[in-house]
Length: 591
Image 1 (cartoon, rainbow, N blue to C red):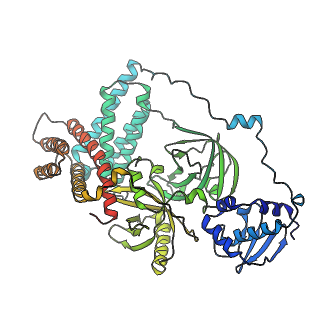
Image 2 (cartoon, rainbow, N blue to C red):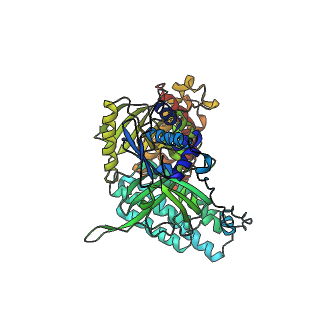
Image 3 (cartoon, one colour):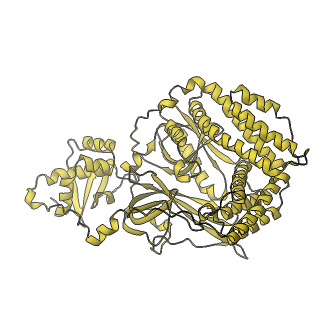
């Protein structure tokens, strides 16, 4: 009999619910079956119970999640659960008075109660403060300068962009800073970076995304030039946090490296264990500027939450935070946040397993309700049933994996080969080789999902090996998508027309208004053939305005940008609605 009565008392108190939470229901049932007729063989070493079962040797200690097993599993396996059940059987032979009472956690002090209490309801915000006449004049003058630079990019086109265009945008951003135009500064710096990437022919540059950003910036600058001005419209230089947590419990679930022309670092991913939270996934960005000289060096990682340690040192620990803050799912590293508890993390746990998507349709339907600009809203745990195929595309420099779920839905996961993704691509290639050789080998992935040209795609962030499998949960497709497959052909045509109009806007941005041309009659006819009269009218207005710019003396780029903005707004809404249905159809091969 063990001398460690506390260990025996904990084993005696362990029930099906607590052991299932420690592993999962399948592992618990397997362990119960394993100990049938089993004669316990254990010794006590340093306060731990060393139990031999099923050819494996388990070292059981408190807390139970810190127990170890000699089998290949890296999580709480069936041998550990079986060992705890054998100890429970031994404990039942002792009189109850010989076992110490399991102590309840101490009650929080008055000060802790105050700290953990919900924050007070904020007082109603005052009306936005009006600006002085001098400040308004400076802002409108600065906005006029920004507008002229934006129009200049559209007139000349990205094909003729020079490095000086990026510098001009950067200087405009500096002037916006001086005029306290925080949002305008952010937008102009984003355009400056895009122009720099374009001029340098960087692979990361996306002309479609740049077109959208330039049109959005033009619309905002236009409001500053003609609309009412106040501090709220100008934005804030300091990040405003829209979420405040008096107590936040998080699990570290992965990270990825990022690298740019002037910055590099890491993005860390966490899961909020509160199942009722409006946003379950959270991120923390540790991105720092690069400095170039004789020797390249990167700024050291920032310490977080007053611990004097970088985030990487916390990434294997289950953490409980006090006074955490976040905006759009991005955590703050503020010293006001405190870590009150840390212990070894176990990702094969109920919080993660309940989030795993075994039916890819669930991710496609969810994306239609989320903000694709917010990275935390695009994250999913997915569990493919098998790997249908994989390849490395030498033209696009992408590793493409064709994944199939348990319902027969197919989605492609893609990773572009770059300096920061080299390790991830090599790891995924090894995993693909293993999955092709062994059909029974399963992995769970943390992915960022997105819909592109009517097709759902995944970008893998992390890969997990859950050797004991995932509990499948049924998924019911929302009612509005139940009869979509009968319209798959018409939806496919609509998506093709939307993509064609989108590409036409991108072409105008690439060539510039001075070279824009081409007959748009056929494209407008396609819009009307699909029953999209509104799209046809907006497309005709924008493309005709771009075409007439070269032939009319009273045309101006601002008018063209306004028509392109209205068209872009229509495309964004239409693409989101039609893209979801198209993505669901393509998973089944309906298109």
